[in-house]
Length: 194
Image 1 (cartoon, rainbow, N blue to C red):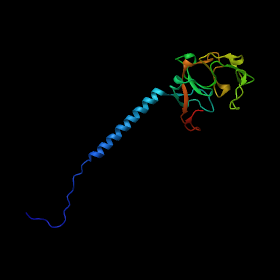
Image 2: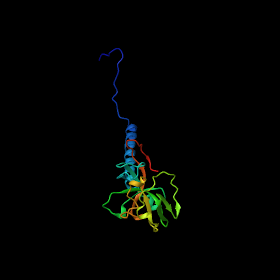
Image 3: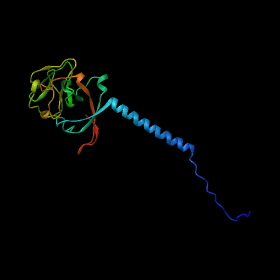
Image 4: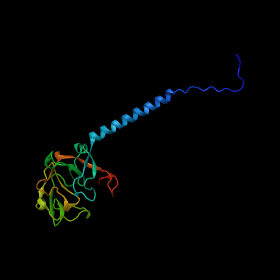
């Protein structure tokens, strides 16, 4: 057998490193578990819906999508200023209403001279909202029961809310959740709802 002179190069067969395969599989499984847990949390705690109408402008626009927390009011009560999502009178065939809590259980609410009064005192709203042209059923003092809330839209003169006889005070068991995050629209970036 003759031997060849000079350098010879042997090409090594490439083998998959078992450690790299293990790392890739761990990363894929970890990602799948994270995505699964995110979906479980969002669908058990949160819910996505759209705003109908212009009653919450300028904070929320017609058709804007929001995320709501469905668990928070099972462990706590809505507070004044919270933006809630509810079904008026528990009507399952209605669309979700999105309004701001103004009156709390046990309080009296009245609208006089375009302003909201709680237990006879003017509600300090820092002129954020327009004067109310039509007080509706809140022209007279309304006493809220221990499970009722008085809600108004931020666009006070273009809102069907607790002033309307067909909605009235919102019972706690008809509240679906707290609106806490809105998705981006033309001139508004995504953000928390205040």
